[in-house]
Length: 131
Image (cartoon, rainbow, N blue to C red; front, side, top):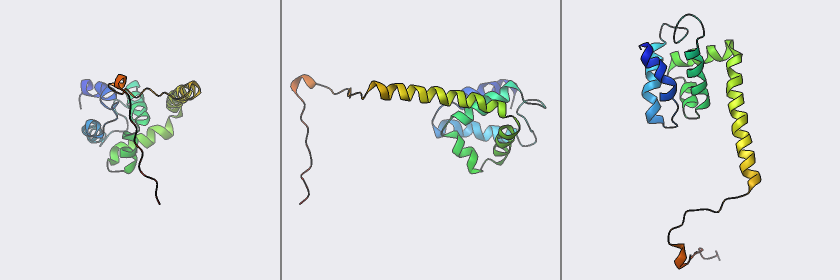
């Protein structure tokens, strides 16, 4: 992969759609066949961006951890084990998400279901009780 393609990987791996990220993960796996790092001989900003993007994507993590993409799994585990400072970014994102969820739960439930034509009235039906 060329440097331009590698720099676009963090945005390409962000969607939570398996079909959208699978070709990019396969290309990254192929790129990492003989490499320890994505770009260069030490941890670069690109490595950390890609690792954080994959780690924060709940669709990509199971694909990587499954082991079908062996080079990507090797790189992912190596970066995770040798560079714990990167994990602080992921923990910070997780804490922000937890704070948002806590604020929403404190605010109460939302009953806005976007029903259409409610000015005519709303009819609800329940199944019969079992006998």
